[in-house]
Amino acid sequence: MITAILMASLINQPSEGIRTRANGLETIEFSVPEGKIKVLLPDDLCAGDVISGTVTTEPSGSGNQKQKNNDVLEGMVISLGGSNPQTDKDHEKWILLESLSTTVEVALRDKGGKQISKATIPLNYGAEGSSTSPFAVDPIVQSGKPIQICGPFDGNAGNSKVSLGSGSPTAVIAESPRSCVVATTPQQNGPLNVTVNENGRTTEHKTHVLSIQLSAPKTDLLRGESTELRVRVSGLEGLGEDAYPIPIELTNQTPSIIQLEGATGNCISQGITQSQIQNGQFNFNTKVVAKMNGTFQIKGVLFRVSLHDAKNLMSMSQFKDWVGGLIAIYEAKIAELKKELANDPKNRGLQLNIERREKNLQTLKAFRSPSSQMFGSAKTAVDRALSVDNFFSVAADLISIAADMLGYSGLPIPGVGAVLKGAKAFASKFPDVIKAIEKAEALVEAYNKITDAQAKIDKAKEIKDALDKVKEALDKADQ
Image (tube, rainbow, N blue to C red; front, side, top):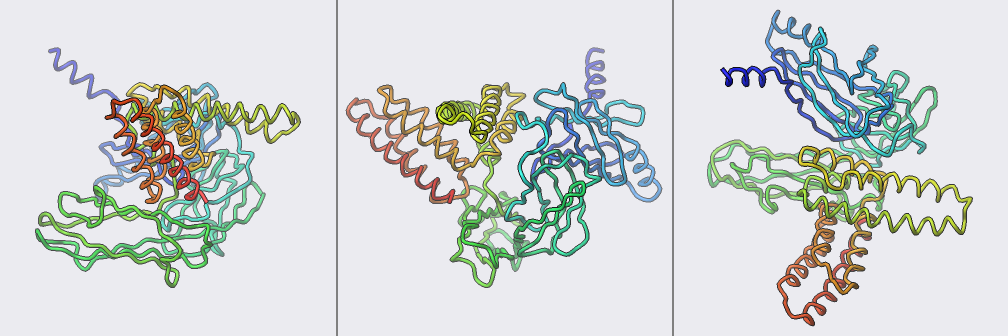
């Protein structure tokens, strides 16, 4: 009887939606017996925001049953933090409550208001309100991926129009008071003009669309058989020297079937340099070897450097140490800026810089020691807080603090190791930086095995020199 009650209780619990985050979007996919509902939202939600998103349905079945399932899906409602949407022709619009704190619940409800499924996403703590920065588009985007435009939007996609090239306005997928996300055309390559009309105000911007194609003579191999993987990146003509290196990553999605030659684990990561470009293209070949019979799959992605690379590589203890280092950086930088402000008290730029960094410092302290349940949300919240800062500059500051730590008699080398792990995650797509970090890591590992005091001091000097080399490599990658 008790088992039956427990089973009934579990069955009645709302299921969890599947959440992913990429290209300026938070995507939640809900699965129900009638099919799937996908919710596309901006990835920088804040309490009190007006936001717009897109909700799509994918009914299961065929014929009349498919239509019936679609009618059921169309009757369902997506609420955010308890707020129901206002619906226009193409978008859903929500007004988030001011009382929301660190997260917002995305709930799927049936026509009668009963909650069927849910997902929880973190709020962008410390960046509330409309953006005060001008409109801007990433200088390089990948074909077929959504484009995120940052700037002073109002969250209402109904009065936003974005045109790519000379074409008609493209679809607006989601909008917040700080960003707008639009679709790209898969065939679009090379230089592209982006025209933004936000509530009657028009601005023009330039970006560059790159595409990546993978091909192989055979994709179905027998055990021991090999084939050549051909990689081509197009649309590179006209890119300036400052755009390079361009990170590219190939991921073996069928590691039980094939081995990707030259891969570290299941990935090949490298930076495309300007000298490797011919006729506006980058070409690269490698070998695929079958470990067993079967069809293989490899995914190719072009990256911009992102803190999300860092969060995916960190354990709980590494994250705590990393955030601790970031707190030290921010406290030191705020103190330095306040000294400058004391000498120039009317400098509004310094005042705003201090205010922004103090908000980020509050976020770092709030999420430094999350519970296991909140670990994912904490990593995302820290990512968002740091998103307005230069990634490599932050990593270089971490290295500077680590080098300064070696000047103390305590020589807290374990803390240096944590800083290196954080910096390594930052720069995971830049081989020169990784090489310098791994050399420093090896020295730290050797230091930890030494028992003689003088030998420790000598090894610490080597570590400090190695950290300086890491900082140089990070600074070079930032140029």
